[in-house]
Image (cartoon, rainbow, N blue to C red; front, side, top):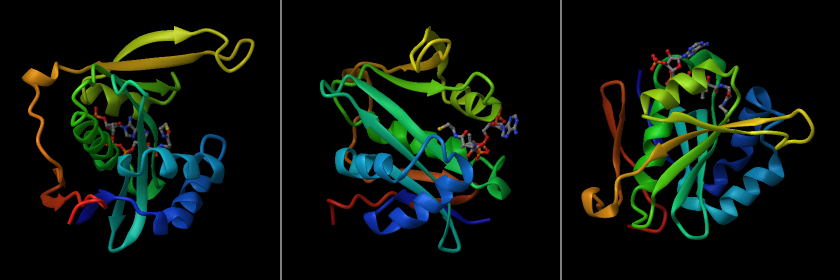
Length: 178
Ligand SMILES: CC(C)(COP(=O)(O)OP(=O)(O)OC[C@H]1O[C@@H](n2cnc3c(N)ncnc32)[C@H](O)[C@@H]1OP(=O)(O)O)[C@@H](O)C(=O)NCCC(=O)NCCS
């Protein structure tokens, strides 16, 4: 099955919102996604199959560019368990690692979200801390963390980045580059 992983565009916006409404309506909404497109346009990726959107993911980075965040990821149910979620993690990590000052990547996880935790663990993330009452009394959040090697020991290359799903390789096309 040929799954393409590539940068998402603003034109994908409506399809992305429809998909997020199916998978995580309480986590992603129109305002949130618009914000991500404003702040981190090069950190949003989509997975397509025969031009159909089957998943997407967003990442961000703090203002000091030392901490990257995996902000959201989803794959439609019938396409889950085929490695797409893991590829969406990898592509975001590849792009975040182009930031010279990057020290770590964090992600908020729900302790009961086994698929998400498994995918993050395969990418090297470890449980880091629980922030009590973060979402209000009794509503905690868990954070997983991936430490990133110093830029000197990292292979910082110019995007585009190459990634793969299954046996098919795809070029990640950056909107700002020819
Ligand atoms: C989390 C999610 C994006 C993972 O996508 P995916 O394409 O199914 O992920 P992968 O196929 O790459 O599988 C990731 C890992 O989870 C495991 N996994 C997949 N579905 C699973 C399930 N239902 N139960 C347990 N483990 C599962 C896979 O075996 C794999 O682990 P492995 O590397 O040890 O084999 C997808 O399940 C999803 O969209 N969930 C709803 C939205 C969500 O929870 N998003 C994350 C928070 S923003």
